[in-house]
Image 1 (spheres, helix red, strand yellow):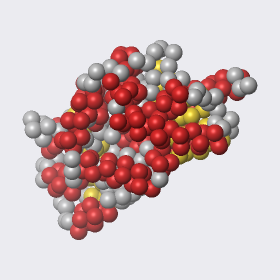
Image 2 (image 1 turned 120 degrees about the vertical axis):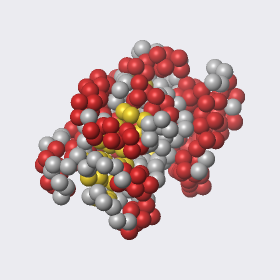
Image 3 (image 1 turned 180 degrees about the vertical axis):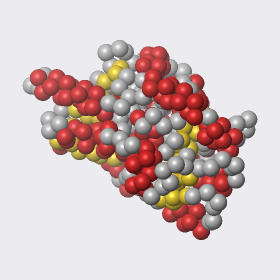
Image 4 (image 1 turned 135 degrees about the vertical axis):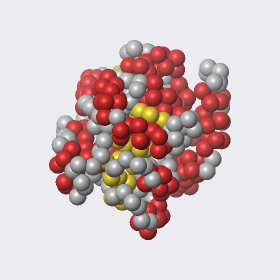
Length: 377
């Protein structure tokens, strides 16, 4: 069985999801290949997309949010003659060459841009391989409605089913398995043991401060504000690939104990050691926290899909969002001082968390592969 996975480098969440799926499929005996969708168009297109995401998420947030809202409210089927759809047709030829060369039984897309291009191929030429899309936020990007020819659509939870219907998907396509996280999140460590391994105080409440792979969210300012709190705690800060932020934090002196980390692949252990996570609401980080039953304090959402993540998480009682009326320090003080509130949040997390998401998805891929092989001429 061969599975081709198309991802897009817009942050690292989509790539991490593709790697998690590939790792699990390989453990089941499948052969996999991951391709960055926009690398197929050449280096210029790849760096434009990857760099463009960094630009809008860092400096042009408001503009991105306005465009996202416009797309959410566009007239149905108006995309068919859009410049974006036309540009996808040129990429479809390159996608098709990769697909024909690898000859997969199943194609998995972890980003709606890639799924949209597959839709164009299926519309014009058909395809032997079965196709599966993975929604990696607690909402559905408007471009998913351009991928209605997918055989399966994996959504984060049943609560998003009405939105999938609105986009045009059917019960035969929709599977509410959850956002897949790496298999290493399956095993957990006792909180006291996790703190011992990390060299943390076993008795101090612990905050995990994260800003995604790029270290967003002005974590230096977050730590400075939290440092003035009159409640005891220790913090672990993960700066990702943002060395400048890591170095600035390292040069500062804090009154509270701070473990300052750069990029790390030990996030499950960090979450096991923590009582709260303070982070922007990226779909993958959020799903990892839910898997670990870790209450969230949400900061610095990117307008658009992350705003929708905030709405979902706060409405389900699994997170507290930082606002003008609920500043960061007040949100953290409230949750650190109220263990019962954190327990209630964990009960809410239990309702929506999907710890077996990657395994359920992989089983669906196996079924699709069998179907593709059975129908092979």
